[in-house]
Image 1 (cartoon, rainbow, N blue to C red):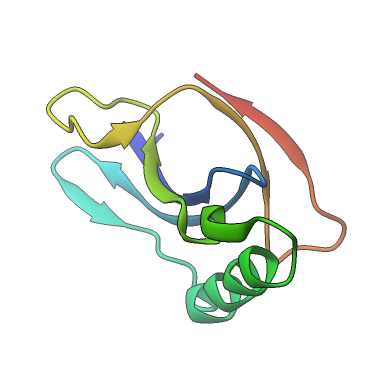
Image 2: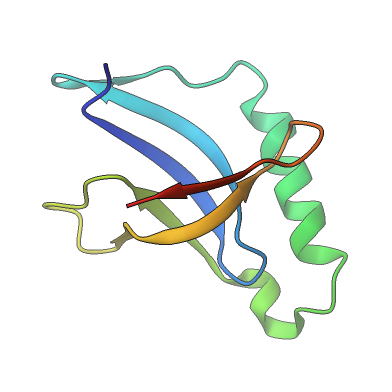
Length: 90
């Protein structure tokens, strides 16, 4: 079981891409299609009326202890899967 998981989140849309998980001391588990999923996330940000907020991305993790620039409590949907799935972390 993972100690922590990390996502790239577009905050205005709430959509996120899973980047990997930490098991003990190592980060791993990056999906092989992560580049494709990030492209989908960038398309979401670019093709909606977010204005300057299209650049509003952050890292999100389940446990942000020691990571002051990461976000740990949000409602989001994943990209790269059909249909988009609502999830709650935190």
